[in-house]
Image (tube, rainbow, N blue to C red; front, side, top):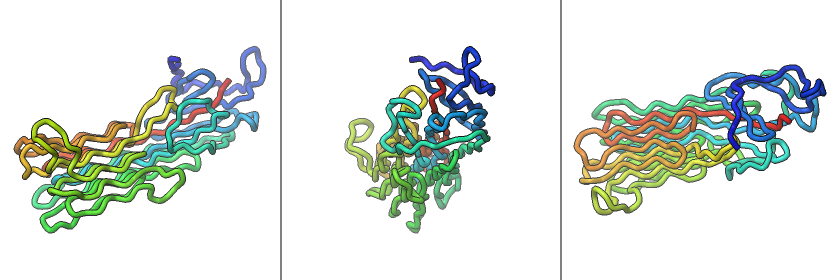
Length: 328
């Protein structure tokens, strides 16, 4: 069913058609759409969810999706950024029988007549340090709504001539650079988990993929493939997959991990692709010189891709908050 947009409109009267008292929540804030008997508020920037009427205890709860900003990619064939933490609730009595993600909890949030701050986390910056040392990507920023906070995605790890890599832990962890351990996911721990770990270092000096919402980042080298070089030696690791949910009225996958950077000394090696759900890929397919990583998709909380050489890794994607409830 097509969504109907009302863009923030909402009656504060507390009365339905014909002057009868409305037993359902009435609220403003974000971009408001409808799907059947359910209203959806989508926040792509920081704001407030303002409840103006919540007259019936049985109808005063909401479901939510809170995704934090993804981590930025590293440079110097380092790791991809991890996805921002992905937290969702789904109580079918509150918001209907849509298809929620595997990470959804059945516990919805009760609300009252007040204004609830909504914070949307920014994506982390891709590393931009020049030679002779590479640098880790920056962690993203957390997102929050009601009592729920999703942790920022971890920045991708790097490697240096003296093999001292670092990476970021977070909602999902950043992928490792050469010789490093993966960034931890679901940090701090919540249940269901809000993310996965980044890919561990593999071989050939390539970077690993950042963790996605439901799948850990892949170690380097990436999967065997045809194409510009037979095999996969020196390929960057692929970012972990994000999670799909229909909380907004249609199925959308968000919070994919960023791809790891390739090892340039292996002719024809390629950068890792980003994970499903907006993860940024890592550039390069046997071409000389630097190859930029791509950014995580805006408002998906996805990780940024690593660059093949020192310049231009991808930034992480910003987060999003969605609130859903029955309104008629």
